[in-house]
Length: 184
View 1 (spheres, one colour):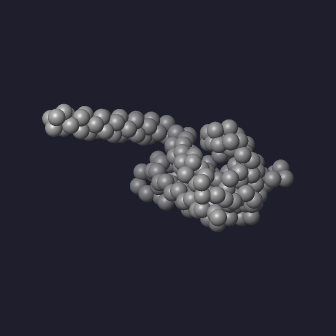
View 2 (cartoon, one colour):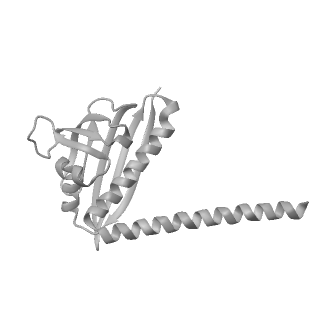
């Protein structure tokens, strides 16, 4: 019995939609900045970004080094584009990735959507966690490739927020301990 996974993340990048479109969807450019990909090339050697174009991808070792073939579809430069796996990808029956680029003052709102269908229910949670991490690292790497200062700011804000959450959790634990001591 298959289970569906759907992940959607949005980030604002200070760049034009056409530049981001090529960076995110052109395989040769994508493999240069995306830490989750080791290899990305058109099947059959030379190719170009077009609907129904086949591309061979190979994930990094942290993503089990899985290789698969994907078919591009829904390409509308520079607003959106994406691909879907032709066959299964490891524990996933189907894997699709979509990108949307919405121009706004000062940059572009980039939305990355990843949908998958796992074959077994028991593996859904760990696969979903790995795919979510992949989406976040891909978006941060895209921003870093385009805007190093903005990416550093985002990273610092994320780190500060994590530290704040840890401090709040610690304070809550200590308050709970103090209230238990008073009851005794």
